[in-house]
Amino acid sequence: MTPSATGKTGGRMRSDGWPSARAHRIGGPVSQDVPVTELLPDARADTRARIEQAALELFARKGFEQVTTDEIADAAGISRRTFFRYFATKADAVWGDFSLHVERLDRLLSAARAEQPVLASICAAYVEVNDYSAGDLPMLRQRMALILGEPALQAHSQVRYADVDRVVAEHVARRTGESPGALLPRLVATSSRAAATTAFEVWLADGTTTLADDLHAAFDQLAAGFPTLRSG
Amino acid sequence: MTPSATGKTGGRMRSDGWPSARAHRIGGPVSQDVPVTELLPDARADTRARIEQAALELFARKGFEQVTTDEIADAAGISRRTFFRYFATKADAVWGDFSLHVERLDRLLSAARAEQPVLASICAAYVEVNDYSAGDLPMLRQRMALILGEPALQAHSQVRYADVDRVVAEHVARRTGESPGALLPRLVATSSRAAATTAFEVWLADGTTTLADDLHAAFDQLAAGFPTLRSG
DNA sequence: AGGTTAGTGACACCGAGTGCCACCGGCAAG
DNA sequence: CTTGCCGGTGGCACTCGGTGTCACTAACCT
Image (tube, rainbow over all chains, first blue to last red; front, side):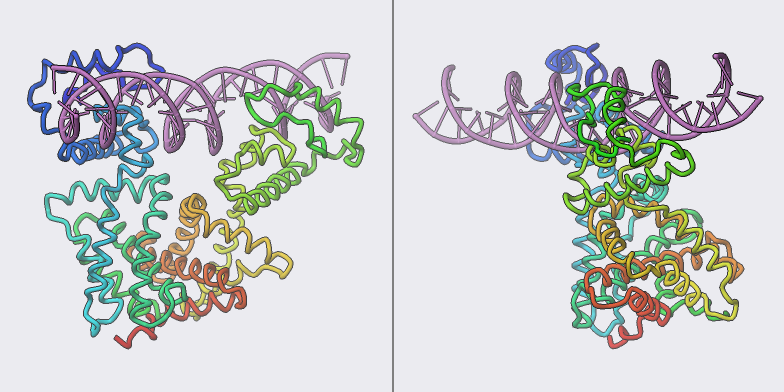
């Protein structure tokens, strides 16, 4: 918890450091920028953000697999054990509160106008959820480059996307009166997510286009049954 | 290699078993059904098949996460280390020679008639690759139930599907003259795979339909831009 | 017979994750 | 002020997936 984490042992089995109480005694008098009091309110949110930031920076610099949870914990000034109290897996540190995004997507879909074509509603919801401010774009790029580029994160993403698909499939089911497990709701959910993911990839690789434009382009193709393909 | 694997140590750090030479000496004279000679030709293929079978049976019975690689090795009559000489990861034991399927898909796409619409070629290739004999269907069901149901395998599948997507995207790129990295080839690849995966899920859940029928149904919807959705 | 080679098992090691316990700080009740 | 509770934490031991290394064996090739 000492803001300057230098001097902490951090690793397990390293046995070259002092017990953590010692580190506290060292760091304590040196740093006074955190008043020690009022640590309770949302110190957890702070710590979580610090871990996430440290992890993201390390992943971007060295690659996901090359970073150990020990290093992340060290960089964030906490112990390895505490890292896993904030994030269930190493991969989860890359996905900030993703469940919030899913909830937001759900709310947007539920509030969609009934006159609007279903795919248009889904596209609009995807665009809205991914409407980041210019200042946040660099972090988004970094995050998505990791998620789409690192095989381990690519694999992990499947689990996260399952939630998205469920929400979208339920929306389609509501609109068509079918069961969420039927072919059409599932298919619309998975293929619209495929469209979104592809748009992200193109947006990342290109660098000149807008994410919203790429999303619209992908969804237009999907909704029209890939008209440019009919030349065959 | 003793056909009856009872008496093997199997686990690591268990230290209650004899050295492996001892086990060989015990198992040797007892079992003569394997002529010891002609073990070289494709004993590897045999061993690989035995491991795969043991793993699949254990996964289906206890769940993927509840099975350790030690157990698989024991059941297959080999050591843990040898398991990882045949399969890079525990998850890979579920996917039989999947690269063969990808190669076959690639060949089918390359041989597709140019007059045929692109999506029809892709659908036909998917159907062809997944045209199992009636006798193999139970194993296919078991495999796919694991891959689509177990989160860990679901995640791992992403890596495998990346190869499929690459092959399909390259085909689309050849047909349209675009780059394989452009939006349309990527999008067609990912969304057609989404269609295939969804068809598999529905086929698995339903039990009365044909996989080929479900695949055609999904691709028809995709190619037509989800016509039943236009009621909005 | 001697050397080569492929397949194997034992072993040690790493890193992700988990359960458990001890500690320490804040806080309420006495 | 002391006592006891409680949330967050660090340390530790353990499991399990995965890897590098080494020694051994059996088939093979001269």
